[in-house]
Length: 117
Length: 117
Image (cartoon, rainbow over all chains, first blue to last red; front, side, top):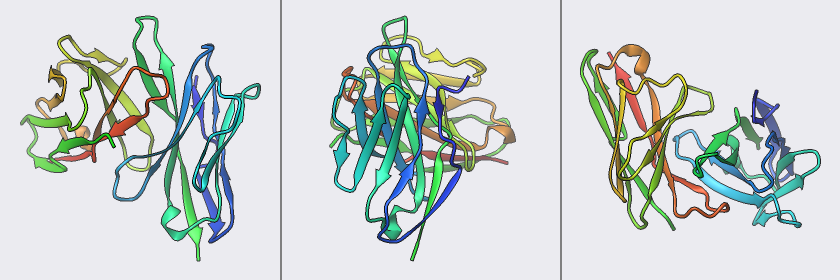
């Protein structure tokens, strides 16, 4: 079963407008971390924002904010005032603890965002 | 910020040969590094977790003998694709986190695009 689900394969947004990229997750852990990454066409992975399961407030980083709804197990990324440079692939990821005491990061299928001029 | 360097950025090799990809954490020590594979327009699939001084932990379905991982020091992990075939052509990305803290994001190398002819 998918542990990280991104249901929007592609999204369009007009420049200067806000856009929400959806992410739902599945875990039985009480403590976990959620991350969003941006991957431009050049391929590098850029860390955008983090939300901890125990954080009571939604995370914000500049134009990025996270709409965290723990009961719904969703962690949607909101990009405000979209810019042409925001056109990229966006991945939601979860850090999952393992029985061995180690951990790993699992990624969703991604959403390709295109900002229109 | 934490920097992960990956080399080479691209490589073309003939079928049957082996290719080594290096991943270095430049300004932090990484006891754990993660190797991902990404097919075009798809998500990152975790291949294995590389632990310094011990054997790598491979994900289900990943051939240990084909994808050899060595984590020789706290700053270097290598992935060797042995007896490469065209189906091994892909984008390989390494990553590491600075700490075991749950809010520690993964820092990625710029990836290696492997083409097997």
